[in-house]
Image (cartoon, rainbow over all chains, first blue to last red):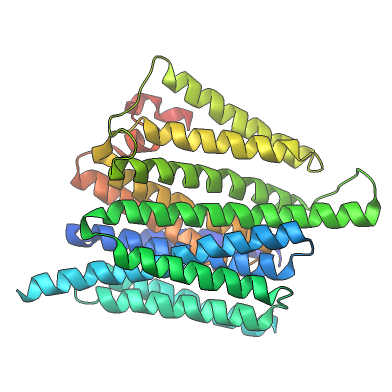
Length: 94
Length: 286
């Protein structure tokens, strides 16, 4: 795709991310950090493409390792965030 | 097919944005996290369907093993150990971005070596520059996160490790990393620059975090999380992939804002954390 369009997407997304986070209660700092971290695991898409198109054994193996780490990031990230939030819920009910 | 993929990526991006918005309010936080997970699932699904997956067994293996280990870690970790868990995970994201960039790079090198059988490599500028950036931030994030998590876990000393002239060493290592980046862009066929870049970026990641005290580690982890987003965005430029660029940029920017908010809450200066425990006066060197 045209580099210019990619840069436009990048810059607009930066502004979006900047505006997205405003007032956060301190209680939610860690879950929000954990949630954004899980989303940055989107690099799993990159790992899928890299592994799927790898032409040499070396690239296949390195790609699969990337996929392994990215999947831990994604799955671990969402599950851990959920656990944190569940904990808060219980506290509030008490 | 391209239209289908990018449309689903757009939907996934919308899920991420609504999810993050939800995560910033207590009453919608749980739903926000779930929306993020749904977006991720959609993006993975459409990628697997639309791209030709030449190595399905390797892919299945990577995803299966990663899911098992990820779930196990997330369920086993104690509530008090959450910050280091997040640090560990964002380090894994960093190394994954680095590996994707390296694989894309080596793939082209190996293919060209087979085709041309000569030492002349001509690379697309966008491709090689974004690979270099992705490797740099990826290695820095990985090692920085490992040190930060290690400090919180008590595996590494929680004291701020400082020595005479450590600021000079940091600047020198940074310059060496930049020199390797320039070398790699100018002579992409010479793999030595790739190894040098990985080495110096890793070294810099360790130096920057080891000089910060244990109490500030949650802020450092938040900052590294933002970096890992930028590494993802760089990887997006390597692969011409929109969802990587969008999500990476959003995580990168929102991560910085969150870091700033945490700094204020803990009465620390952001520049202090970025440059590894120095006064604001040194901030201009970045």
